[in-house]
Length: 430
Image (tube, rainbow, N blue to C red):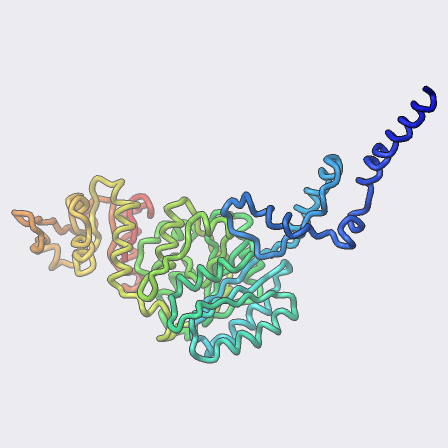
């Protein structure tokens, strides 16, 4: 009996020994010198894909499963490594036939003094000039200093448009923040650093900056407007003909916020994709902030994409936006300017908003003496007749259709006499 018990005890000791020893084997011994997962396990890890954009960084494979107690410290460690290795800023650069300016543009990326990680995401939109060769040359130079360069293209013989190119450049990039740049412009060395700092303070804002125009005499009024708006006016003057109160090549924002707003319109040539994105950004409660330093050389030339957008297209979008954001909340208002621009604005309104117009106002004695503006194109009978008053006799709120910075300060002085608050008692549409 004692002999039989001894044999049983000896047999039971064998599996107990292996259960203890097997998990203590080193990871590299179990995988033949490598910690990579077997191919079948790598494929299974995608079975529950959530549909979120996949990281462009390689994912470090997990070691084979050990014990539950040993798994706990591994997960946080891997997560920290991934976060620390993520690119901080992606410079988004669409390119189409930009050989004249591209060298200087790419050089300005290399000269950034930002101490964090930067990548340059370029989408070459069917360029037919020497742009691609210039990009390849600068790719080598940039990557030598640690700036990774991502280069994409549509493979099409025809350009797909600025909105399409920007979206593709964003999609192929991986940075936490996006710094937009046009291929004909030049960044000052401190641009990314200062806008990064500003975006940390204003996470739901588009961050812009002051600009230097080249040539200096091009669009002088526009340049003054861009550089001298107050912080409040960055939000109140969004209906003017100038477009976004911070221009697109100066935009800096988080990737998270960009995707919250949505992507650029990909309608192609003639679509004001930056204006439409800007309006949607405001609809979703986004802010606007400007770094009050000149951080971009903004070039003006006939080949610029903005020159392909018709004035009528921009006018239509502006009217719809001011109706949606402002006039829908007003029961009546006055149009300041009984001339061409004021009458055009009135005719562009929907019928419900036309009926809210109580008067036009002006300083022109001839228009005021005439007494009324009759809307002859109206289908109503009798035709609408809108009174024309001197601006001192008119009642706010006003939609102002007078161009700024064009009357030697006289209009601005008249407006100041009324002691009204911009954004409450009046909005500019000029």
